Length: 75
Image: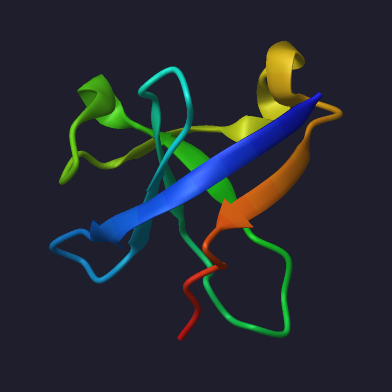
């Protein structure tokens, strides 16, 4: 599965927020350039919602190849 995540901004805690094609919001909780992204769903799918479930624990996304559009936002 290929998953394109479109950068839509940073939340109130300065975490990058991405949206997938289904409208699901994802937060990168460790946006350091030298580390892999740690992507979490957003509580209630809200832009400023807390990080909720890690993507790696969701069966649907377990083997997904992530593509950041236009690129990954890092600190």
